[in-house]
Amino acid sequence: MVTDRRRGWQAQVVSRGYTLQANAPLRAMNTFGVDVTAAWLLTVHEPGAIAAALADPAIVGMPLMCIGDGSNLLLVSDFEGVALRQAYDGVRVLAADGGSALIRADAGHGWDALVDWSLGRGLAGLENLALIPGLAGAAPIQNIGAYGTEVDEFVETVETWDRVSGRPVRLSRAECGFTYRDSRFKHELDRWIVTAIELRLPRERQLRLDYPGVREELASLDVVQPGPGDVAEAVRRIRRRKIPDPAAIGNAGSFFKNPVVPRQVAEALVASNAGLPTYPADTPERRKLSAAWMIEACGWRGHRDVDAGVSSRHALVLVNHGDATGMQILSLAQRVAASVHARFSVRLVPEPRIVGAEFLQG
Image (cartoon, rainbow, N blue to C red):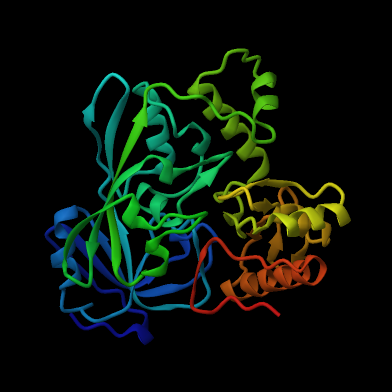
């Protein structure tokens, strides 16, 4: 099929298990609401169709970007390649015993829906990760985490399509290279397509309630002896207050990671900046700093440059008030990071994948 993108034609190829659309608008497919297009949008409806879809003559050899639910992307320009969406969303129990269950979720299954599905079957573990936007397939890529829990604690296997070998590959937790908001997949974006995840979830687990705000929220709900479902509800209430709804105002949630620094650096910063929160990190010798606190201390909360801004509800959230371009949001992010570095000598690293430009710091 011939497509002339300069004239705005949109060609569509429908084949067994997948659909291809040319000159595809992506504004509704990224939670920032940035108005860009992709040369091709590839929607795979069946996991077994990935090989045939990637071998379609219309797109062979083109750059590929997995967009999932678009909740962890900043698109700075039109994408002259293939945007991939996985529309299959099955979930099931693979094995169970008295203490735990192994569950499998397709990449296209909504993450928050998976949290509810697991809680509804008497499984614990994901309650602190409630209301994180996006799909299950993105969870191991970002190693999503919130309120003292990260998904890698429960990952047993990640099913992938390996673009190098051209075959499905199952990766164990150890092979995924998980660290704080990071994984092997983020460093090999052109190789792996996550097709499903397998999580080992316990039936009973000591609840994690010590993250700031969680116990207070449970108290406001008059919950004295909370269960996992109560914790999930508390986390959802906190997140709804702090994080703007992308359906109402474009955003990708937390834009920056909380910096992890040597303990001595953290202690020195706290000594000179009363009130700066710190949290446990991966080792006792390191501490995690609050990026939101430092951004707010630099005066950015509620700042607005035309339609690009910093949320007035949470300084860690960059927002699109309407028609901001990806470059305007990126420029604002770089200035925020530069001011934090100038004041605290700490570098901020973006959480979302930035497509079409590099994140630069002064």
